[in-house]
Image 1: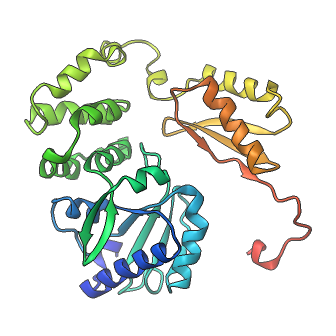
Image 2 (image 1 turned 135 degrees about the horizontal axis):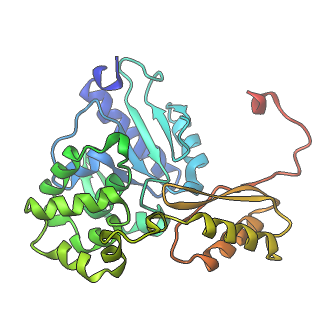
Length: 305
C-alpha cells in the first residue's frame, strides 16, 4: 500500500499545517509553502489531502528546523535524499499521520533568506504565509523531470491553471537549460497555454539554444560542467593558496558543480566555494563540504547510532 492509499482526516492535515507553521515561526526561521498547497493558494486546484505538505527553507536552517518541529511533537525522518527531511505529525508512516516535507535544495532553485522574504503572502487555512511564486514553482517541477518520470500531465495542468501568474519570459530563460524544460516550453506554446510567440522569441534570440537545437557537438556542456571543466576546477583548488591544504573532490549532480570534503572551519569552506565561483561564474555550485570539529575528543553512543 502506497502513501497516497492511506487515508488521513482533513483535520489531521490542517492541524499538521498549522502546527508546523507555528513551530517554524516560533523558531524565527524564514520559510515558504511549496507544492500542491502553494498551487492552491495561488488559484490552482484543491490539493489532495493525502499529499505531503511542502515547505521551502534555507539549507543553513535545517538543523534548527528539525529541532523546532521535534519540540512541537513531530517525528523527524531523514530519507536517503539529501535535499530535504521529513516530519510526521504522528507516528512515522502512521495510518492518520500527516507528512511535512522540508525542502532546502529543490531542483533548479536556490533557497535564500532574500527569496523567502520576497515571497507573496497568501491566506492558507486561516494563516498568513509566504508562498513561492508560480514561476519558481514551475521551474522546480521542470528541473525535477527525468527520463524515469517524464510525465507532463500535472505540469501542463499547473501551467494552464496559473498561466496569468507565470512570468513566461523568465520561465523560458530558466527552464530551457534542461532537455525536458525545453520540450515543455515547446508544448505550452503549441497548445496555446503560453502567450503567443513569447517562447519562440526567446528561443530565436538565445544563441546557446539555437546552437543546441542545431545539434551542436558538446551538448553535455550546455547542461552542466564538462569533464575538462571539472578537471580544471579540481586543479585550481589544489593550487590556490586558500584551498590547497584541503582534500576537496569536485563532481557534478543535476547540472550543478558539487564540492565534497572536509574543511577546518566555515571560513575555509566558503573560500573553496569562492575559488570555484570565480572560475565558473555561470554555473551553480552545491557546497557539501563539511566543517570538521577538531575539538571533539570522543565518539558518543548517540553519534554511533
